[in-house]
Image (cartoon, rainbow, N blue to C red; front, side, top):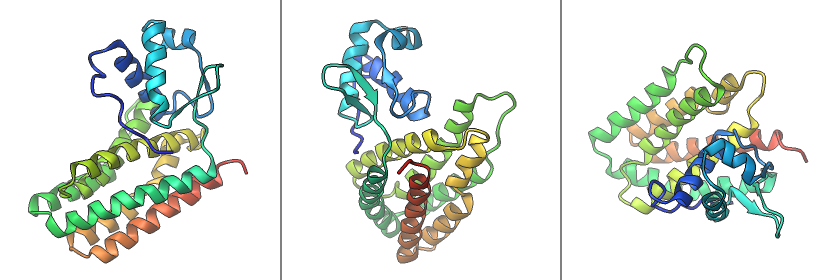
Length: 232
């Protein structure tokens, strides 16, 4: 399942606004994988009318996170084991190439951004009375920002854009599959700072071979953990 960009006019058209709001709710885990998308419920959730909502949902079919069910409506795409493996392979095709370029071309400012990003993950703290969605979202954003910092010296804008979308898809997987009793602690276990710190150190020392090996190990470990949480 590949995630493509939602149309650029998301802040202009009603359909674009609907697509963005629904996409945010899907990625956050508020709209669960496999759940039916009912227009009446979405009207109450978003405050938008039925026409832009239908158009917005139709746009999200192309993202891979929403699936049309013949003539019966739409559901949030289910998470299945083969899709996790396919995602991981596809993600690594993009991220390994981006990191290779970043390590070869990144200036001192790039090194500083990588260090700052991994520090932000290590220094993350939950906030009193923070909503589950917000706490998970902030940690996932810190994690996403680390991977983007690592790839940020890559000269290909398309590669970075695709990686950004793939990182959002990883949020969708993780937010749906974290343990219900302590979701934030479980999310931190899925994205351990120790692995990211080792990856940052290898990249900053310009050891491309080690950095790429650590990334491959990290992503396939995560894939294995996600697969273990899915029904056979």
